Length: 306
Picture 1 (cartoon, one colour):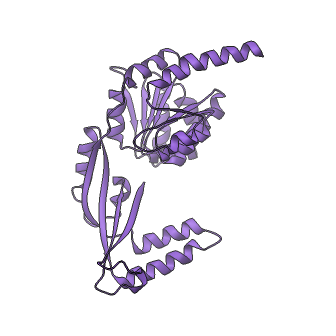
Picture 2: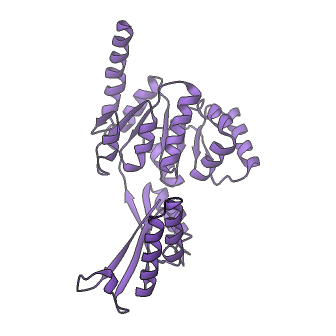
Picture 3: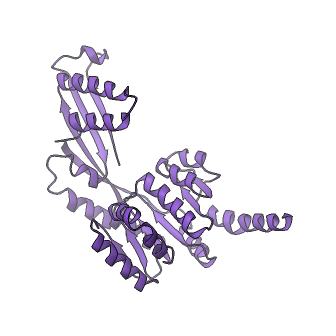
């Protein structure tokens, strides 16, 4: 949920080992507000501004930076190389070094809000799939407010339909209460964040999936790529039905590979998803023809052949 880079500002493009104390070395990082809020030093207005942008349906990113001395960089470089060469616990060791030397006390530079418009004919496509008996789950890394806006604008949630939000649930009592409410309201939609989803998948795995698959729609926000794949696998195992996953970015690759049928959309975020998928399309609305027409015909032909 974050990405960083070390930049060396110097006229002469010499080797980093020859840097003197006057060299300007900066560590820049961008990421989700939930992660960056604990990394930047002063964030009095951060939560308020990201919430305001999210309510407008914008995808937010927080940007920060930190200046490093030559000595700090040399120490970091040595420790990082040692951790990267370890045969066991490599990823954990590298993350520990980054956290120790880089990811703390960053200067907050600003917050960006990008409008990610819906593609053509998303609304009628989702409505057609719903009428065909296909249940749709939306798994995204966006904030709760952004996910809600997108779900409503895409008509994933019907007009007047109640959206039950489960966010920042950390204890078992609150999780049980949420599950009991969903059992009593099978016609509502569920909006759940990554923290609560992690608890549900860990402590209430069977109860959660048995309730969630009965709901008309589920929106999971602040999901990591691992959680997306885990949800797809869990639905397959519990329902014994065919699961189709659609994505357009690198974060969706693991989810696409975990599905019975993976569909990648070629778009602004590159071709990673389409290269990992079974089928590749250029627009979301092509999905309806692929599933409802070609999918049904393929099933009928296979049935006749068998």
